[in-house]
Every structure is written in structure tokens, then in C-alpha cells.
Amino acid sequence: MTQAPPPDWERGERARTALTKVAVVAAQLIVVTVAAIGIWYVLGLFWNVLLPVILGLLVATVLWPATRFLRNHRWPPALAAATVLLVFLALIVGVVAVIAPQVVNQVEELADGVTGGLQQVQEWLAGPPFDLGEGQIDDAVDSVIDTVQSNAQNIAGYAVTGATAIGNTLLNVVLALLLTFFFLKDGPRWVPWLAAQTGPRAAPHVAALSARSWSTLSEFIRQQALVGFVDAFFIGIGLFFLDVPLVLPLAVLTFFGAFVPIIGAFVAGGFAVLIALVSNSPQTALFVLIIVLLVQQLEGNVLQPILQGRGLNLHAAVVILAVTAGSSLYGIIGAFLSVPVAALFAVVYRYTRDALDGKEPAQTIEGMQLQLTNAADSPAPEGGSALGTAPAGGGDGPTGGGETRSRHS
Image (cartoon, rainbow, N blue to C red; front, side, top):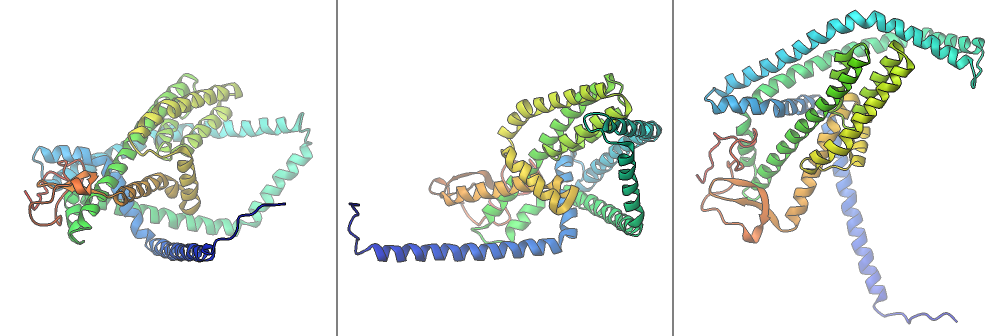
């Protein structure tokens, strides 16, 4: 016979208590989910305003070290910001001026290579193991042409939409550059001002989170720039010795593709292999593929572990999911911004976790330190509040510049 323990008189009460707790947690999750959806919806409404701000912040992380150097040598903030920004734009224009003639000069050769490559593909499909007849291939080509002709009106509409998108992109770029100038000029004032809008208890957390977020964005830009340079350098050398056309444009594409981790490098390498296939030969394309794989192995097994160990500390699966979600929602811009946004979420999560463990930013006479210490061990401020104070560290970024004075100092 099956032996069962006798029921406890408190079993029902415990079950009701557990069910009550589950219901409370479920209700809280529902409220939090609804609030998150509402915030996401509101952010979507203001996306055209938020996008230039985000792009401006990312560009500012690149240009701030040079701006800080000039400011430390007694340059006026506005002059330092304007000079660095103009030099940056001059470099971009110079790179485009160098790349554009190469693309124009070799585009005809590349088009002929694509035509020859398509003919080779057609002959390959006509042979074994596919054994597709020329009639079947011609029917498939005619079907594609008919589809294009029948959707000519829609394609024209897409062209108008594309022109509108280009106009919006140019507007966002101009706004981002203007905001970058103001971020570089007035950067050290932002965090003290933002902390001053909150209460005495929230101000240290606002300042510390702002400093950590800035540090994370700066680290991301530095890491991906280093990775992109290494990828572009070695892949460019391989393409040069294999006599593949458009070496410099492909190297630049590889460099910028590194700012979309994992996915960007894969796409840039695919372009290099495709151009080698249609312009040179399948053997050359195979060599290019081997070079790309070797460089990716160097990046994945050497560079990324070293950089992520002291930087973003995001798992590769998280990076892939973030890039996939960002690209599906906002296209190329979403793919570019997905990883830094995921890293910022990770910063907020880790900071909240430490705060729940009873840790808070330490306050000193000089201001607020970036690290977290136990609240019981933190020295009390000698007077005043945290409002208007800047993170200690003396100008590692616009969130904490050298000329921002603490109220305690």
C-alpha cells in the first residue's frame, strides 16, 4: 500500500499565503510590464528627437579626449569644441574624397565582373547536380522581370520614401553634430545640473549612474574602434596582395562594420568575398574567405576576451540577440545602437543590484566617488547635500569635468 504522510492542519493556511504572495508578485509584474510598454510607446513617439541626442552622445565620446586636452591647455570651451568638431568633419570628408574616386573608377569593372559572375552561376546551375535547363533559368529570369515591371508604381513610391528617408537622415546628422558641439562645450555642467533637479537621496545615484553610463559608452567606442582597425588592417592587406579591387572602400566598410559586433564583421567579410568572386576568381574568393575567418578568429579569441574583460562584459548571445532586436525594429541604426543600449541596461541592472545589497556611492568633501561602498562604512558629508556636486575623478568625461566645483570644496 502507498504510504502518505497525514495532512497538516496548517497546510491550507500556508497554501493561501503562498497563493497571495504569487498573486501580489503577478500583479506587480503586470503593472511593471504595462508601465514599460507605455514608456516604450512614448519613447517611440519622440524617437526623431531622441536619435540625434543618442548619436551626439556617441560622437562626443569619441571627440571628448581631444577636447579635454585643449581645455586643459587653456583653450576656451567653445573654441576647443568647435576646433575638434571641425577637424573630425574634415577627416570624414577627406576619407570620402579618397574613397569616392576609387569606387567611381572601378564600378564599371565591377559591373562587368558581376555580369560574368552571373553567367558563371547560370552555367553552374545548368550543369550537375542541378541540371536545370536553360529554359527553366530563362523562365525564372522573365518571372523576376515581370514582377519588377508589375510593381513599377510601388517601386516609384519606395524611391520617394527613400528620398524622404535620406532627407530625414541628413537632418538627424546635422542635429547630432550641433548637439555634439554643445555636449563638448557644456558637458561638465550636465550631471551637476541633473543631480540638482532631484532630491538629496537620489542625487548621488543620478550622478554615479550618469558617470558609469558615460564610461560605458566611451569604452564601447574605444573597443570597437580598436577591433575595427585590426580587422580593416589585416583584411585590407590580404585584399591588396590578392589584387582584389576596391581595397580601401572594403577596409573602411570593415572598420565601420565592427561597430555592429559579430553581425557587422560577418556582413563586411561577405562583401569582400563577393567582390573577390565576381572580380577575380573562385580561388581568390576562397583565399579571401580564409583571411576573413582567420581575422575573425583573432578578434574573437584574443581581442574580444581581453577587451570585454575590462569593458562591457556582455555575453556573445546577449550581443547577437540585441543586434537582432535592434535591426528588426529600427534597421541599420537599431543594429548600431543595440549593443551600447544593452550595455547601458546592464549598467543600470548591476548598479541596482549593488544598491539592493546595501551599497551606495560614497560621498567625500571633494564630491561623489564613482565606486560603490557599503552604506554603513561611507563617511557622512561634512555639510550640505549632494546637489550640484560632480563625480570625483577630475574630468574623465563630460559627466565630470575639472572645472566643476563641489559645494563641499
